[in-house]
Amino acid sequence: MSNMHRIHWFDEQIRSGRFPNSSWLAREFEISRRQAQRDIEYMAISLRAPLLYLAKYRGYCYEDQTYRLPHLYMTEEEQSVLKYLAHRYRHFNHEQSDVVKRVAHLLERFTAEEQQILSRPLPTFAASPKLLQHFELLSHAITESLKVHMYYRDFSGERQFPWCPLKIISQYNADYVIGYETDPVQQSAIRLEGIVHVRLTDETFECNSDMQLSGWEEPLPVRKPFVAEIRLKEVQQTEQWQGYRIRDKQDQIHFIEFYDTEAFMQHLLISEWEELISPGWLRNKMQSHANVILNRLHNSNHAHVK
Image 1 (cartoon, helix red, strand yellow):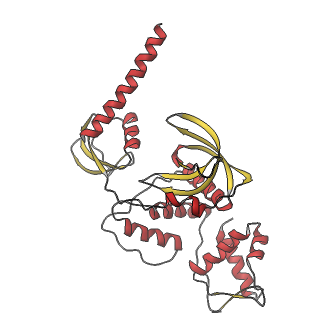
Image 2: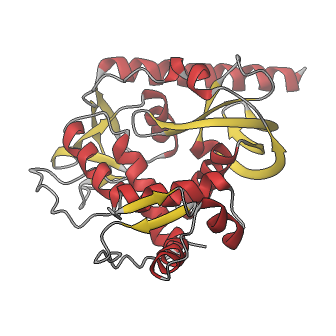
Image 3: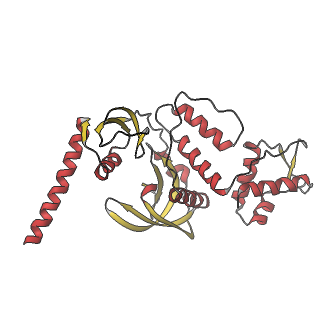
């Protein structure tokens, strides 16, 4: 159920003079006390509700009786998309990062403040239903300190393992969840795009995340993108080539921006293109990678002949 349903119920209890508190809210909607308290904090901070806690009645009232909740009716899907976009904009660390992060702040607060007009459009992020679902499940697991069972696929293949998620971060246009399997000291980050399936369990874990996550909190440097000069079969009619921004184009030659070298190389391996013109270091890496694959195929064929 949407937190706005809970907030409207809480608002009705206040207006009826019942002095509700977080325990009431948690009991009514079968949620944790911590989640209920976050709803109340959301009312006070984001919706600017003039909440006043009266110890005498062990509950809340409004200091200003003229206050009215803003009309914020959104579906669960709309809230999930906004939450995800706020997360991505908040961790955006490339050009115009300061402005983009201010937009993230506006999304999080759901205010009607007029957004600053940008000289360039905001960055776009792919928000597939599968990725949003994993983001929501992991966010819930982090909030409630729940272990999850992870089905994960990367270059080494597909595997399953238990996971204690601690935090979701974004680095250079990719989402990662930080966590550990058994030892809190042995933390690692796995990419959300590599998750095939995630299942919540009833088992909880304990971890002092403020201390354990200190190594992941260092601010990332603001980076400008690499630019690859590639000749494509056809002139692209949009400003993107399968998700990668096209900075410029001259007939079939396209200047394509990218941040994650390994991810872009994987993209080149499965995409159609005519010629990789520059940069030279990327050509060399692709050549080296291709040689490794050819050697493996050669060794495999040689073994079959024997």
